[in-house]
Image (cartoon, rainbow, N blue to C red; front, top):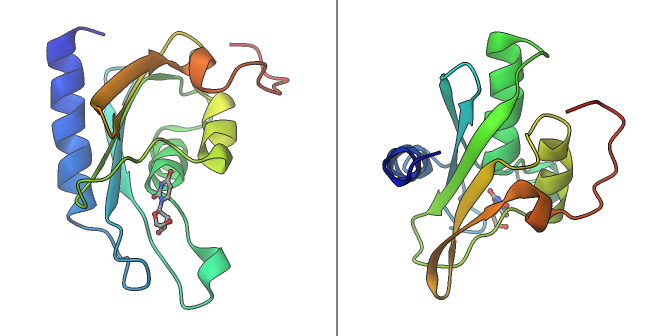
Amino acid sequence: MQDAGMEELLAQARAAAERSYSPYSGFRVGAALRLTSGETVTGTNVENVSYGLTICAERTALVRAIAQFGPAIRVAAVAVANRNEAASPPCGACRQMLAEFVLPEAPVAFPTTDGIVTMPFHELLPQAFAMRRK
Ligand code: THU
């Protein structure tokens, strides 16, 4: 995806982070997925008083995309943002969930302590366990 496309996707992730429900951690995360169809789907983290039930922004976006467009979707690009001026690469659980639907070459952009980093998904989760054909 072009840089301008990633900038737009990051802006949508930042907007999604505004809608975070994170009263326990105070960490407001947003994610935006660009599908191969051209559609964009966003998500935010939703916490729970039973802390382990919390769902991350990336998985919220992914399950939303499948609920909306069906299981044949493929994710062509991913952007993650937060409202805490902190690093937030996708956690391990989100990487594994994304692996089921993301193209290996899909760019993934996320904040680090050195600014926004973009890398192909296969570098973020090398040797991913997957049974589904990409
Ligand atoms: N969080 C995400 O939304 N995405 C990640 O990849 C890492 C963590 C959320 C979960 C929780 O609500 C908060 O950040 C603190 O862990």
